[in-house]
Image (cartoon, rainbow, N blue to C red; front, side, top):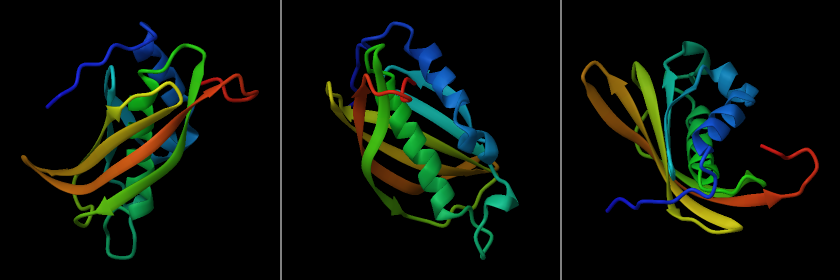
Length: 152
């Protein structure tokens, strides 16, 4: 069942994309935002052998990083203009080796809140015309208000 959320900030799409562009980690990985909706963000990551572990799969830390961002920005899309987002915790299940031509991280809000939001996410490996689920995550994100140095 898909939930429909009403964002507190009507300019949430621009705000999410601007904040994402400030993440040098995502730039380093080659990740990009593919889609922003109220309560949902999709990030694409191309395969790069510089991001692999010893068996040639994308490293679990890379998969976790991209999925954390997808869940975080899904939560951020529903937050008011004066809030920033930080991850409190997450639990990831690595379900299959991350082997593919490119990867799709989908983050979606499960339960929004003024201070704490719960999001869920999945990463799919795409190869040719097929895709395979490689990871799932549940994350808890907090809204940060009026903290110096944390505006986005």
